[in-house]
Image (cartoon, rainbow, N blue to C red; front, side, top):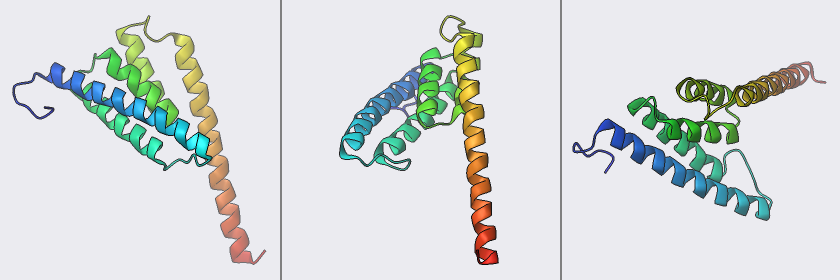
Length: 139
């Protein structure tokens, strides 16, 4: 149905966004199951499903840049995957379209999370460099 020539770009955007919503619901259920089983991970089935949902949202946004549901779903999925920079970008785009749909406080919160994540990634990289240095020096 998504490749049908009979569908308008707006209709295809709706289908992509709806498929993303279904994938997000599936990912939430998988998260619950993984948590109960004690095996939650970055590359687990829930994360893979969410990354697929992010791609569907991005495709929907390409087709209809003003589709607020696709932007909102993109924000949620990116936040869950800790891709806060993408979440901030979509939140700003959503706010520009509909200020009531995304307040400035939400953008500020996401920006703070993005800064925090960047610091965490920097610390991880420094730790890895230290490990490499120590292994070379034989420490």
